[in-house]
Structure formats: C-alpha cells, structure tokens
Length: 141
Image 1: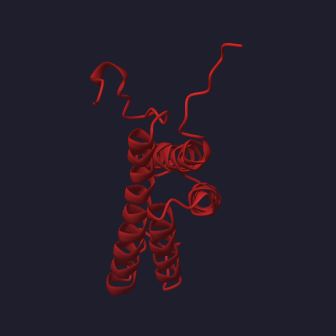
Image 2: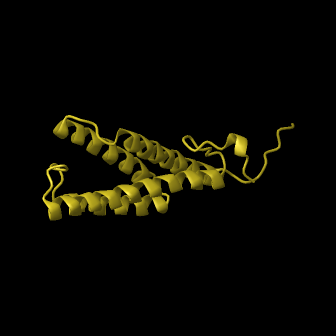
C-alpha cells in the first residue's frame, strides 16, 4: 500500500522491496533517456552537420550503447551498474562543460542525476533488504 504523504518523487523511500524497486526504475529510465537522446543528437549532428552540437561525433553512438547497457544492468538491480551510470553521467556532463564552456540542459541534467542517485539508493537497499532474515527476533529473555 502506498502512502501518498511519504511519496517523494525526487527522493523516493527505499525502506521496502516495492519502494526500492521503484527507485531502481528511475535509474533505468534515466539511463534509457540518456541513451536515446545521445543517439538522437549524434544522428542530428552527423546528418545535418550542425555546429550547434559540435562536440558530438560518431563516438556518441558508443556512449548510447554504453548507457543502454547501464540501463539493462540497473534493470537487473546491479549496484555496479547504478554507481557506474551515475559516475559516467556526471563525468560526461563535466566534460561537456569543459569543452563548451557552458552548461546547457542544466535542469534536465539535474533530474537525471537525481534519478541515477535514486537507482543507487534503490539497488543498495534491495540487496540490504533481501539479505535480512525474515523472522522476527524474540527480544525477551
């Protein structure tokens, strides 16, 4: 049962298996979105030979495949994939800022970063919750 009062889109609860899985889903969506947008911008840059996205070339397709693999890893609840996705995304945003000397898409990058953080929290919570014993311990002596 979902408690709407405690639902937080930007910082989801990860105290139950259900809520942790939901948080993991944020990372799947974020990585999938990054993969699709990267492939779309790479195609646009190559086909139109636009200078708007001058830092994007054919190597961006490798990046799109990488984020597709990250999305799959997060979907499979891999802690490594969640952390790796977060770190790669942040590193690429920092590289983009360094190359272009501007921070285009700051709002979207902020949302995606928060979603990757949610997936890190969710994957770690899932592993922690699944390793806990299901029995209730007797605290009386």
